[in-house]
Length: 225
Image 1: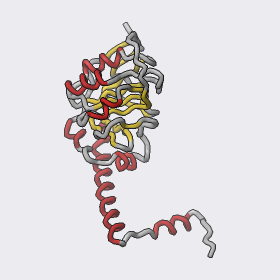
Image 2 (image 1 turned 30 degrees about the vertical axis):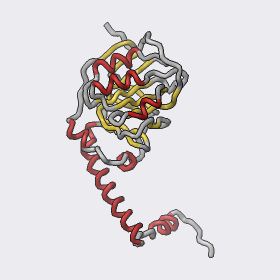
Image 3 (image 1 turned 90 degrees about the vertical axis):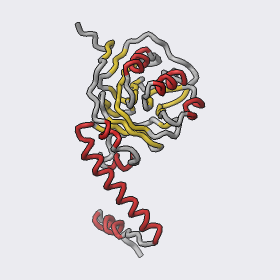
Image 4 (image 1 turned 180 degrees about the vertical axis):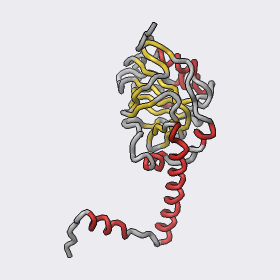
């Protein structure tokens, strides 16, 4: 029997933890550049200063309802990130400090929510748990369903599949397909290292900006003295 729209997939394929951890300390902006500026969630912001890295457990939630979010919390494993498609609604929060503390006790790395949270003061105190959301409201959720756990969702305008690698920092959140993660990580690391060299050149006054005029000429810009 199919009950599409109200079901839970309990098991997902998770990438190797070493592959996930290889993105630690890489700026999200560098990784995004190596994915042609795609796969970044839009409209979500961090509510504490803890960097995010983990594997996606996904939730498709009914607006203003967190029943399936609670079920995802029950089946998520240490190192996971719970990513919730709450329809972008910011009238009702779908989580707060109680669920955040429960997640921390289970080794979950963070919540990423296309919707609203509450108890922001509590979230800001966590140094081992990341919280990203679209907005904040004190108005709480209902617990009626339906919804789905571990299906393909959209969060911040970006497709997220169960098992995707999720990283986040002060700039925002990015989704990485595991099948391409090793190559993306290598490119992002190289870009990060090249930027470190650029910082040094700027600091010692040897920065080369000749590319600016070259690009303008290539585009047909007119120079007037």
